Every structure is written in structure tokens, then in C-alpha cells.
Image 1: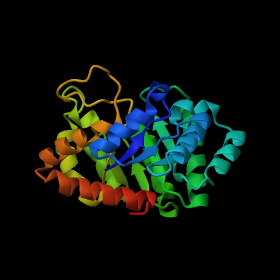
Image 2: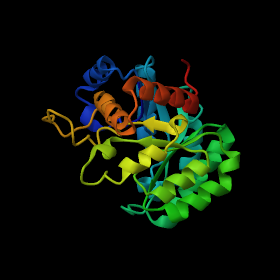
Image 3: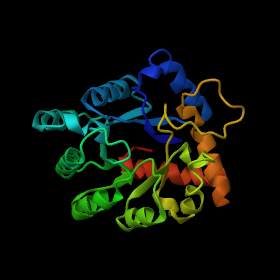
Image 4: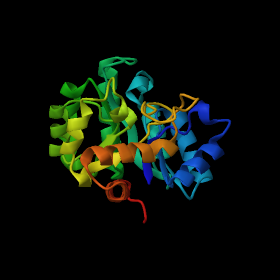
Length: 261
């Protein structure tokens, strides 16, 4: 299995990262896309991808939360990091109007600059959108023809947003949010509308632990080893064989990130 969104640079993994990766591999997750969310994190993701060279890859970008720190110097440094052979996507980038940790105009500026980098490099994009669809969609739509592949990761939005992204031939990343009986119920009918050739799965660990894990883990830290649980839950909801569903997600992930089989 491939976890397309794992924040393995997070300091909660500093004491036992080897064990976390080993337990995930034992559970059947043998490839990890490590998310870059600012310059330091992106460099750490690259370093980890080289350290765990047989199973890890990295993305490079500035999360919209950190867009206030974006400038042309950062742009230059991102461009340099994107040259590394373990980098498989531009991002995480996009818009987040739920938290608004960065001013919206700066989020938009950063997002558009990342699109420029993706067009320049030909790399796919790893995108974040939360409560910002009205601004996010027209920006993405304007540039979509110049981009290669795109994934809207950790999708939690509504049917219209889903259809809009699918119309733009985007991949859709689904996390353990779908297992949350409080916040994820609206996703259950929507996952039926995601074509199997556009379906990706991820943990977004250490965040978004599936709430229906049994027995409930003592730690609240999400880990890549829980990806099979997410896959099994989605497959059951779709009335699909789990192995068949997982095969589709692996094929899609390899196609999106251009990973060798």
C-alpha cells in the first residue's frame, strides 16, 4: 500500500520513526510520500526520503498556514529543493480559510507561485483546500491545462467541490476523516462518486487518527500503519473487495507520482 500523505517529519515521530515505519511496512504499507509544508519541513522530508530510500519520497512546498512567510527568496529555495531526485510533487500548497493562519491574499500569492513551479518542473501538485473552494477552484481551473497531474489531498468538502475537481481530472485523497462519525458522515455518499481511477488514500499522520479503530490506541497519534484500516472501511462502504480497492489506489498513486512498480 502507498500512504500518499504522511507527515513523518513531525517531531512526534522523532523518538521512534524507525519503529513507526517498520510497523507500517509489517501492516502492508510499503511506500510513504512525506509531506513538505515549509522550507525546513521540505528539507527534512527530502533527508528522510534519502535515509529511507527504499520506501520514502518527498513533496516540497509551503502549506497555506505558512504562506505569510512566502517571498521570492523562498521561491528560489523551493526551486532548488525541487531538483532533488526523491521529490515527487510540488506542495503541500493551496488555500485554507478555515484557520486563516496567513492572510488570504498571501495564501493566493503563494499558491499561484507553486503553480508556476509545477508548470516549470512538470511535477504533479499536492494540494490543500479547506473552506476556500470559491477562490481555489478558479485559480486551479485557470492553470489546469498547463499542469501535469494534481491531487486534492485530505478531501473533506461537499459534492459540488468534488465534482468540480473531478471535472478538472484531479485525483482525490481520502483520509481517516471518513471514519469519523462526528465530522466525516457527509463523505460516505461522496466516496461513491469518486472514480476508482482517481481514488487515493492517506493517513495525514500524525493527524486525523480514524476514530473507529478497535481497540482504540492508547496514543492519539495517527500512524501510517492504520492505512489498511482506512482502506478496509472505504472498501466496505463501496461494497468492494479490499484487495481490489487497494490495488486501484496503488496503481493510481504510482501513476500520479511516477513511481516505479
